[in-house]
Image 1: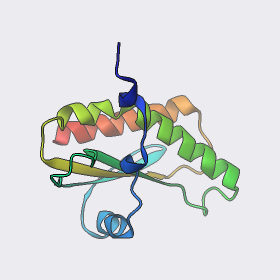
Image 2: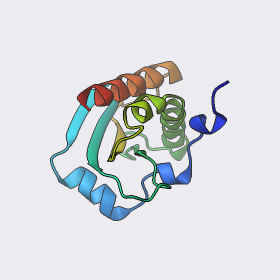
Image 3: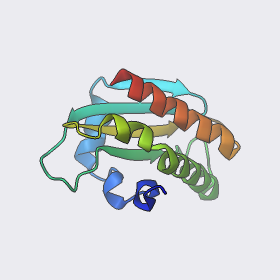
Image 4: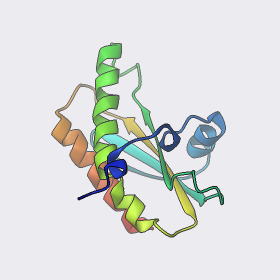
Length: 133
């Protein structure tokens, strides 16, 4: 039976620090666009603190594209769920590694999509990131 904690998404796995966000978007980091998401990631050295996860994520849904908060929240919920179910793709690669990955998912779509399309986009993004490691 699979470990139930492997499918959780803790607060530590979400990016909250303004410094990390600025560093993620300001420096030339790797980026791919798989509709309806653009994924930006940055690889850094992990601290010796064992409580820090090997993968952290951020979701951005522009108000310019989705004017209603209900729609922005739906997209964020879809991406969060797809990441939660598939983060093991990266965790297996970084199991005994000293590297840490910060990932930002940015919605580039103009309208809402089915959860299956968002799920496929997240999986393809995570597979490409894993291949680049």
